[in-house]
Amino acid sequence: MNSATAPSPAAAPAIRVEGVEKSYGKLHVLTGVDFDVARGSIFALLGSNGAGKTTLVKILSTLLKADAGTATVDGFDVASRPGDVREAISLTGQFAAVDEVLTGRENLVLVARLRHRKDPGAIADDLLERFSLTEAGGRKVATYSGGMRRRLDIAMSLIGNPPVIFLDEPTTGLDPQARMEVWQTIRRLADGGTTVLLTTQYLDEAEQLADRIAILHQGTIIQNGTLAELQRLLPPAKVEYVEKQPTLEEVFLALVGEEPAGKDQS
Image 1 (cartoon, rainbow, N blue to C red):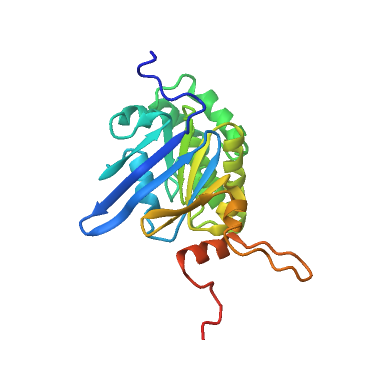
Image 2: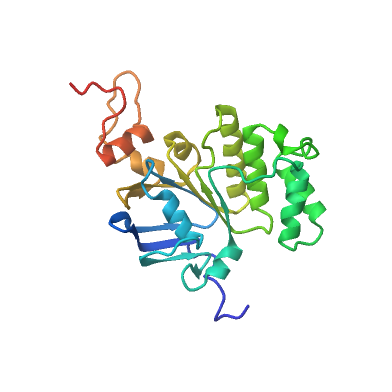
């Protein structure tokens, strides 16, 4: 690849979003979104249902066109270089896209063949080991738990070693144990150098996983920072017997102007 077409250097953000807007008729979903995502980090896009998280992911993955603004992924502009962006990313939606009739290994081999990869069997075996699915690899996916299906889904999305992965509400509908399994998988991805953009409405998920958290509310990013930086937006902790830092839930609700659930509003 020559210098004229090469993506941005490693020091540049893996994802850059500037002034992105998107409307559906009179419904303004995104009204000017800005943020950067550092390479090899986990970035959580936190917001309520309908905040625009999935719309933004679709724009970044070239499935939708923005009405205004610019976005780059791995150094490629999503509007002018969509083919290069698709080569650099993987997208995992809210529900596992696996074939239940096939075994776990067969699902991986199928995707590797569709992507014209050499030695698909070896690729499948490596991913089964990486995602702790080796023993289950010969079983039909219909017998898998929710967490196992999601781990297999993420493993399938990594065939080809994309540097950037989008996980859109990856633990929706999973039980607590399955959520923990997926969390461990996401941490391992980042530890291996993959950039992860995670959308979620679960505050504890963002709190546990993210290097940085952006709160998307009414179509724009109202705050963006580390968990510690967001916690400092509220008044200092009151010291009685134990110093208690504000939770991410308290920060989120304060920023979007809502009362915590269960608080007496009389």
